[in-house]
Image (cartoon, rainbow, N blue to C red; front, side, top):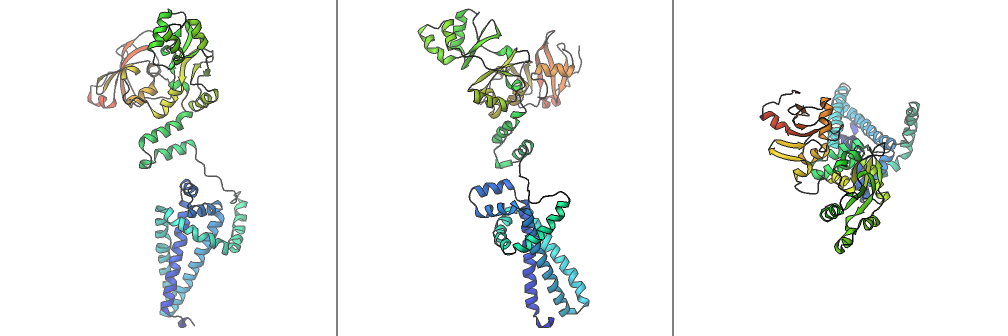
Length: 432
């Protein structure tokens, strides 16, 4: 009876079955390799195949059951046809050889090669295949349902619930990795901004605030003429108002509200207090993302950072948080404004009270930021004492020489870049 079937027809059917086997194998890998976020994006843009694929992947147990049902069916049919061909060509002794040949052909052309292509280009294969699987699933649903019923029953014995697919969510660390590896898809400057937004929960107000000693404000105990000169010359939009000491804060005044009285010559301390708004305080250690929300809720633009004793430690503004995200708005920030003086291409004189995060950002340095906030604090932490002038040390590959120090703090240091460390003589790590 096998001799009644032409060999040409048998080989034609075999080729069709091998193509179907490759289709099922490649589409399985492609659908499971799809980037769910790219798929969701395409579905939201209205791409029909993406919407269909997204629905299919909502129940992967049904999809896998359908694919395996089809793949096994065509492979079994291919094995039967090879057996018939072998019997016609060489009798029963050729069946074994035919089985070996079919196994190799299916392994190479029906499994490895299609799945490799699918893994490299999942969207090109998965999206068109989903348009085939959606109606096919409706046709063979009873068989798929029975297979899944039995398979899911076994899975439940191990505590697995295939009908409860966990949502595909990214943690902050995973999202950070995605952004960092976006490559040319996202411009480098935008990558830095996105990563800065993700880092807001790890950065506190202490890291970016204006230190207490650098706060510029109106002291009502100061000569009034000096205060008027300060108001006229200041670049700040808001100024704190206090008596004698910043801890005796009265409030904050918008400088633009004073210009009318200033122009008329009628600005007096009493008139100033009428424009003064109550101060807003936040505890030190507040994450920047939370503080940004606090600014929005309180409709404020600035806040005073206080410690556990209520003493003011610094001033934080929305501009400080914005600068942490997008970087300095000045294309060429003046080094003197951050306490840096360039000696050469690889040597800098730095005010030891400079904020480490801002130094890293503006100078493209890589000093550690997980400890003290200032260069003075970092050096003292490393040496565990206040060093004498002339002391040298290396921090994260940056040679640092102490130039000026008092009994209480370091005043000025010389910082060499790592490249300078290679070119210049090694600094002596001596401590007086």
